[in-house]
Length: 289
Length: 236
Figure (cartoon, each protein chain N blue to C red):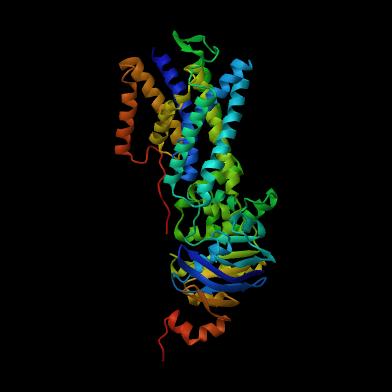
């Protein structure tokens, strides 16, 4: 029971982390909460669903296709909804409102084109394996491994490549980064492609585990909580926040009550913010004069 | 190499620069002297394409500089901004590497990095530390080194003495002719008029958004107006 709950918690946490990373990446550069991210995750679930059920692709190819699809949508989202605001030097509030508008637009596009039906993925990874007497779902193990893999890849990219260094630099001072030759439009394309790609993977996992429907983006509110718990704008924060949230939910469901699960998550958020207003790894201003 | 023609800049309705013209010739150190709020930093940011002028032009090596800072960098300008503005979450070394963002010549970048450590030895000691942990003087050295890492033809230095002790200011200003000797033109914007005039070949005095005087440092240092307004001498 303990091991099983732990793995389930880590697996959900890993998917939360994938989603939280997208919120945090965008927040770290543009300083606003990209509420269109949840809808992009939903679109990822649809892309994956059509690729595997209509085209009959395998789960790997479907996931890759979903990633590419959501990366493109995410880039377009930036170019159409945020770039015009950037060029006018708008304050973050306007970006957030624009994000909400983009979310509503995309969600309604799904209603108009696909409809409000619920779809379920073909069965993938339904088995479970026994580790030390406990049965651990295969899907959980796959989700955990793939999230870990991509998060490691992202961490390496941000820390070891010149583009990654530029993203970290721009997260503190976009103007000065541009005076060193960084093309901000290009940099944001990379950032939104990354956030979108991660949204695609998360969307496919959510689709396989639960169902696919237009308002499934609401689940991603949890990922936003994870990002805030970790300290929004911080990458390690998003990962740790996601894992903590996943573990808390899985242990509360297993040992206390499934219905109390969300009460615990939200209470945890409120208490944490009272104690640490900028989250666990939040940005601090440490400029010296 | 740098020519500014009748540059006017507004912040909303407020006019920050009014028809400013200025020139930096190849290999020159030109100082821009003026009080707080005179428009020095506005002028520097506008030259680099970070602010869009209402009218007027910035011409660098015969080409107009667009209002895009990354293009200004590509054209061969380097900026050490006011208040340093390092990336505090990056190490000293990563800050230097960011300076060389546009360059692809790995071996040359590594050599320039060593040159920077030779010029500012304290950076060598601190190269794995986050820039946010450096002292004010070290940060200023890093800001200049970061700007030099792009191998600029023209270096814009904005208020390098800000927040530094007189001793550190002295040491830092000694580096300016050193950098200039490698063939880099320098436009130095500085409140410390005496220091800025001592190091320059030519200087401009900027007052409430317009160029009030242009002359050699010797002439400016002996002008009554400069002596009274900027060097603290009383009228006789």
